[in-house]
Image 1 (cartoon, rainbow, N blue to C red):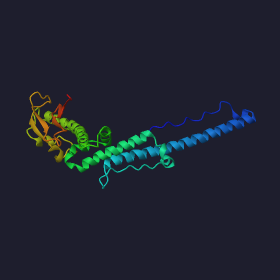
Image 2 (image 1 turned 180 degrees about the vertical axis):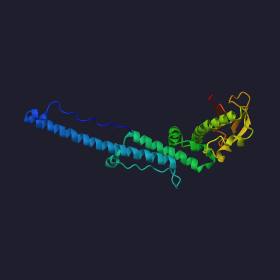
Image 3 (image 1 turned 120 degrees about the vertical axis):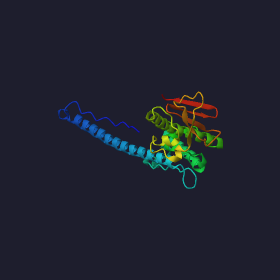
Image 4 (image 1 turned 90 degrees about the horizontal axis):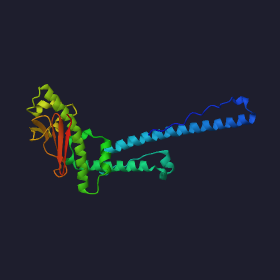
Length: 254
């Protein structure tokens, strides 16, 4: 939260000692009052900045944790002097953010309970991604949850596709334009964050006719985890495509 600080108190235009005594006293009182207000404002700004930092940290921790041992979304406890003084004075924006964080926590908790819907590509998402997809998610129905988790997985696979495309392109350059013959030939071109559990979800297959991803052989996802709502990714050295129920995407990079 960026907060503007009060402007410095301007200096009197005339020498106070040259003014009549009653005017000197009045100006002195005004100056002392302004200085007091300035100190109080600065103190309040520091307090608000500290509370804002605490709220951001608790929001991030809540979305990371997803759920507590009982399986229910863990509430965010925000302790601030303003809330203690008057709970009704809580800003609508703060209420909306906290409600969205709780909803993202519920969505993440669903994934923890349904581990068959988890994929290692989710490591590339952050709290902001979960908040984004939780905003419009329908968490009161099984279909709504499945659709929301499918969108989250697609976003995660989009992030991985960028990494895989770069690794594929590096291999093609090193091999003089020759495509890889096995997945093992590509492994050394991936960063350390891509472990075997992730890369083994993909296989090399001949590029379908009309596919323009820069190679006659491409990486293809072996099997989406939700065959009704998921998307299937195919990745080459110049782009990637994803196809799902009722939708299709082509990301052309080069």
